[in-house]
Length: 150
Image (cartoon, rainbow, N blue to C red):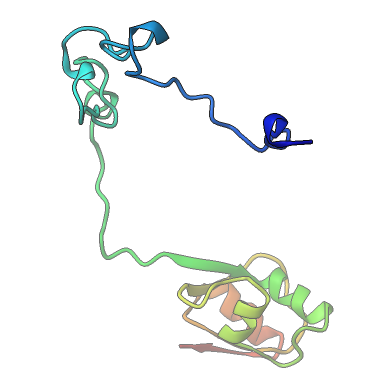
């Protein structure tokens, strides 16, 4: 090996770009493969996102409908069978609060938690959450537990 036969390692170089504007003999001189005139031939040209060549863009063709309430509260639902699963796995014994939801990845710290009534709860639990459905609250209290709204 000497200086005359050094070359980069196989697969280490990725540059396969056209070298534009390097003389007529290169085949990419003159207009630098941009054609003649028009916006695309100019420097600084960039088309808008969603531009369809002057055709009415999709986001303007599709009708707008409905209403989005900006004050809507999006609840993260946690069902009773999930709480029973936590008890069965030995993660909780008596109290379930936000720290338990976060550590068991049932909710994140910014989410608002609502306890839902799917499944059945056999364990006596003291559950703290932001909201409860009527069936969930009844099931928790029927099992001898307590439902505390935050």
